[in-house]
Length: 82
Image (cartoon, rainbow, N blue to C red):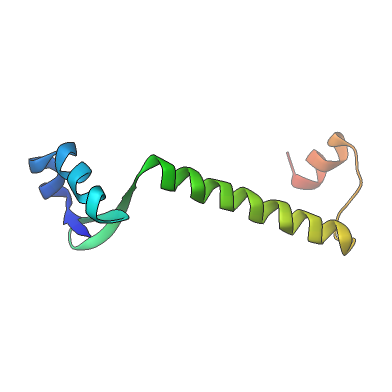
């Protein structure tokens, strides 16, 4: 579902709540372009969980393939230019 920022401002959070009962998410447009997405908290938390699971899989793959560096924190910061 797509609504405008003005519509959100005019109708408020209760309108978004009703939309989220029918749709998985609500896109908010600003000047005709999608700018924001509103999700139920449960859906947002699931996305964050999937993101973490993906990061763990990538790290495990890198470890298995030897794509890592062993260094001290000082060496790491120096390499990053911090």
